Length: 230
Image 1 (cartoon, helix red, strand yellow):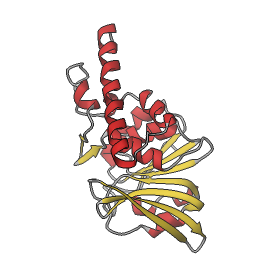
Image 2 (image 1 turned 90 degrees about the vertical axis):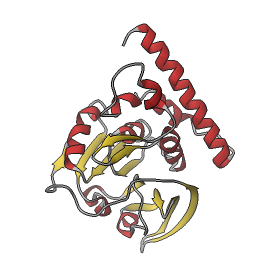
Image 3 (image 1 turned 180 degrees about the vertical axis):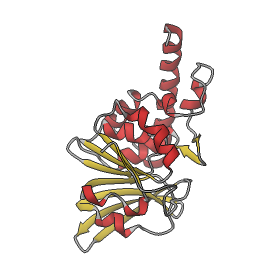
């Protein structure tokens, strides 16, 4: 990347963070945690958009506060939603995080800089195989092809779970894979929902957050179940 492009990218990222701040103030009356913003600043969003031309002309679109298509009928979430969901989980450096819906890998890359380990599950095999090369430099991320409803039982329990697809009912199988006091954030019936596990049965509390639009959480997988990069 030449000096002019780097300067342009710096300005574009500054605008992205202004947009995130504006949305956050409107949603909660507060700023996103600085650790989340720092992780996003270190993560080149344009490299996670498969069909984006790697040119300065396309960079403003890639960093604009909107979802972008990544192929296979899937999208990369708008920057504010990435920041907001990461912030609401209150992720600590020692945490182990399960992500349902790898997509382009951008969210996993951001999460990897906030916690000790990210386990990410994607149901669309060709999408996952396109994504994994981008994640090789994030050495604390492992991915698996699988049905998101099933989570990743072998590595449970998790401190935090993030679901990046809309569901109409709370997936109790995922709640069971949380540690007691662990948290999960997911799009549920048109809103983000924050779930806190309070007991082993499992018992839990839920809190409705902002309205959102996501692709649906679909059952099943697109090919045979194959562990990848374990």
